[in-house]
Image (cartoon, rainbow, N blue to C red; front, side, top):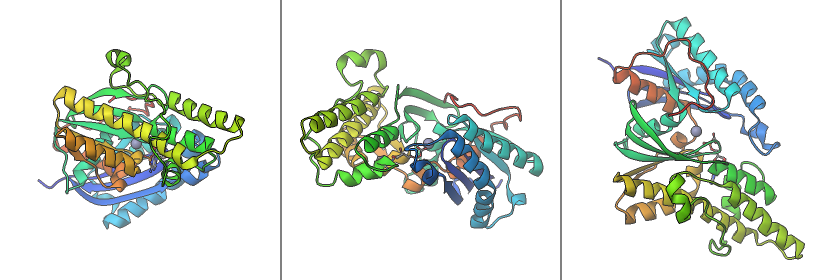
Length: 343
Ligand code: KG4
Ligand code: ZN
């Protein structure tokens, strides 16, 4: 039997993503982002994102079909992110996917966004996914540590952020340093030549007393406040702000915690594999530190190409294909968008 041809739709945040796969073969991955529209607000505005999805979805589906060189009639199944994410944004994708599935008379698969990030690795044939694996997913919307025993049937949430997502911390600190949105690449640029040990910013939830209660949870709001205080005190004293040192020290605090907890999860659980996903993977220092510490701990590290790490429709299509190939029944048509959908 031929591998299923699946069209996947992703609208959980500010990226309108449509991907097409045949089995684990990537046929198309088209993304329209409303990032620029959010820039002047310093973060993603849910209403603006939902409206942008509505405008972008039709053209993005058409572009994906063209890229895959297929017609709608060739599609065997439709997959869509139904959570977690922004409720209004998710609703646009879910509505469109249902309409498409009904019009084409094809099965529809509701997919969890976070598990989709893990499934993206199957499309990277240089480093196909092996289980069990620990997955660290870091973006502007989520910071989650998962234990994946089986992609379609056994994914466990080990920990997540109790306040800001890691990417959000980059965005907020960039803002308070007077840098534009999105903050991640700006902080990276500002950190060039900076000393990461210049200022010892706090590492959230890593002290021994925190370990017992929430060992794999993250917290970045204290770090953001610490940077704000440090800058305020300098300014009050009339001293100049050493931007490169602040940026490098802040970035080091974030990636130190991310990598420490991910490696600790692998070690504690005896799982010698770590997968990274999400837009913050664009951070070169995160990748470098993860490579360093994973190698030291004997952990095989997998980092899919960035186009598969940031939010995209191909990862959603791929999870749909995996569900089909594992014999899962389609979702019934009555599912809705669930902004807090658990894994
Ligand atoms: O996955 P993504 O494209 O979209 C969602 O968050 O849904 O991730 C975007 C986030 C933003 O918060 C952005 O500041 C962050 O990823 N980011 C980075 C870098 N590039 C993007 N964070 C740190 N370092 C970077 N180089
Ligand atoms: Zn995401």
